[in-house]
Image (tube, rainbow, N blue to C red; front, top):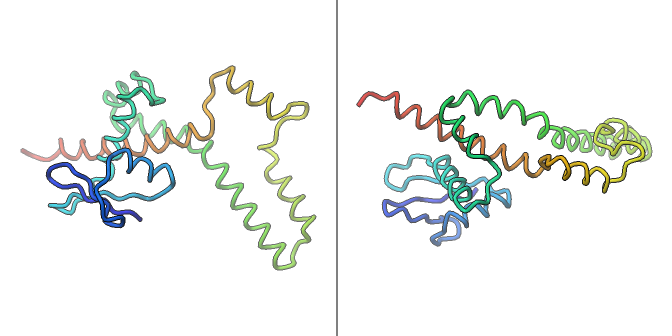
Length: 183
């Protein structure tokens, strides 16, 4: 896990690569699947959520974001309640690939142990993951066309939005804790 230290001058230092990095470099690490952790050098506090929120802010500022301004307005007005609603709405769509991968892993293990033949394993996998198949009479191109016509988000878009929501949730929670402290 890459550990980044943020110094008082706001510079970010990658302790593994032993070099200074930018927010964009951290964003790229996250896109590649790294579980990046950012620590304040002076206090040792984990400020990962703040840096992730800053990355999202910079992306939104450049116009590359997917989230409408009204969503941010709602999030600020309703606080963490709205983020929880969004997370609950997106979780089922994002959980399916994980479930399918687990089914495939377990069936492969049964085949390896000899409890199922390879043919039986393939057939069970087809039956258990059939909900993801293209409807009869439709090609993958038909499905893609319908998705584009209706401006529906892709699985990748949903995953990116969920990561952003998690980051915003953590940032809001931190801000709310800061407000609750007596001055």
